[in-house]
Length: 327
Image 1 (cartoon, one colour):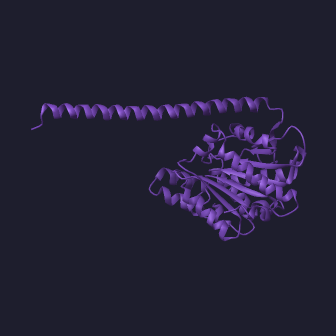
Image 2 (cartoon, helix red, strand yellow):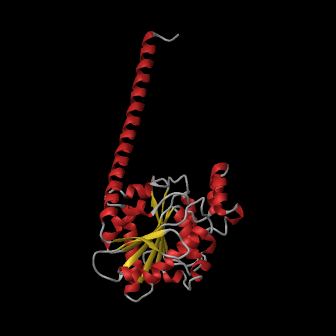
Image 3 (cartoon, helix red, strand yellow):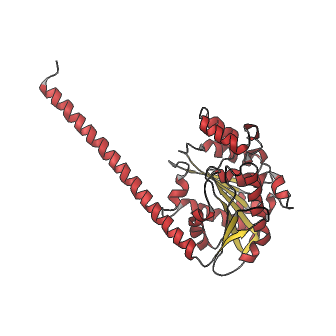
């Protein structure tokens, strides 16, 4: 039989445990609240930056048959700047170029010209139309970026999440750029952030998640297109030097998808570097880069772009310059 003292001790232990749980929950909630407040402030500042920046040309048409437009950010002075094309994600169905003004705000001080294109979102478009549109934006950049102070020989493609699939396919499947007389060799590098490089692997990961499977099937125009729509299918030695970044706590696109793509690139002889973000989920890498100092994501992009494009500036190949640092 339990004594009164034992009952009192049990009650005390329960109270202490409950208080500890409340403290942990409250502490976690406060940490999250501070993070989202900083994110709100960063986005508000970026909105002001987009509205007031005198060095952005907005809503540029990049193909006569494509309704979406792109924005071009340029440094205040100079010409021959390295160029970054930033293709955002959003599950193929959300996002816009204005929302990603924070990327321009952080990359512009590094002396880059930044191009952020929109593309038609699902359900109005999916595979392959989204890739067709981004290929047109890439070609427009190569053809016209000198008018905005950029060097068309020093262009790096950066893509995030679903944008990694859309842009990665435009880069690696030859037919998209070849339609304009271009190829992957016209770009100096590719950066993928938490990208969907292999639909088959993502579908397998989500397994019995019928909702995710149905959504991807609709975007693909049928699951039979999973391989054809996957950048990993088209990896060859012609791919440009690549930097991949992924969180090891990503439950939307598992880090294994990025690692498999990295290994496939290396097996083809492509200089490829992989950076793991410990504890980061799918969107954490980008969101935290908007609030942390220094922003690891943007610092990594800046370093990679400088290495790749410095090779062209020095009149040597990008592969030679990057090979010593790739892993």
